[in-house]
Length: 344
Image (cartoon, rainbow, N blue to C red; front, side, top):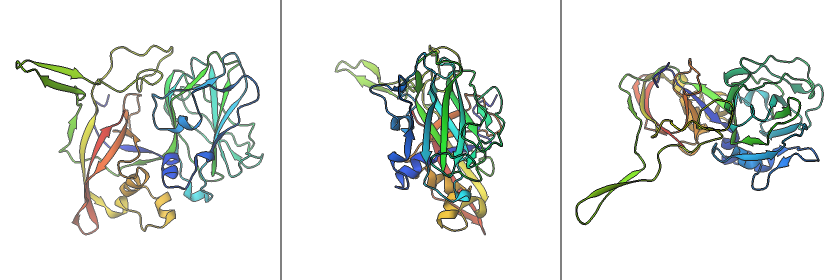
């Protein structure tokens, strides 16, 4: 149990949305190859909205009783192996257990994932992958690769190492027999995680902001009443971060909005800022400034894990970061403050 204790935090930064915001990628670089037949994206849903950073905005693929493969592919447009440092995938708001789904993850330097040029990496479970890790498959073919079968609906998070043949990434969704329901997906995040070099200072401020959405009004007669505009984050397929079978979200869940004020003191400049601001250093470094680069300050939300050594499903929240000016403490040593605020 972490008791929401911020020890050594980890930031999961969405590279697809960062590259889109920077103009490096276009929405046309996100594609699917749904087969001809009865498997299709339902009316009112779209592929691009699966990447809109809003897990409550569920998208539907019509697939009940069908068995065809579904492939979702992203061209990161980063052709240099060492610079394409994506290291995690999160799938929020899914019903993979109800729909009888298995999936695999691959990357390649060719858009067609041609045989001999495909990597089927090992997948390391963080949350709800496969009741454990998924082994790598050395066979460099698109038809190879080991499948994950999430044991629960809700959301899934896994990491992988990507060192070669990695411009294109692909998720292949398959039925374990036939699909037993239409497929629901709220948000797919593909990106890079960064661990901070140390825990924050002990003077931490934390707030749960219960009742944040209420407004107290006063009548002409002096009576007061409260109007509660919202209570908590909207449901995904289940309640946010919840894992279980079935589609009924828990009726009792955490209200409010988590927020932390953190300070990190005596951070070596090598952990604070890239060596220089060349494109390769922006892509390859793992510093605090890289986090702010990938989130464009508070523009893009990220997944926050307040203790990188504990990964139950409740030890995360989608957040925005608001940073304060950094201060040099001694030669080549800096401090920085940041506010982490939960994002619905």
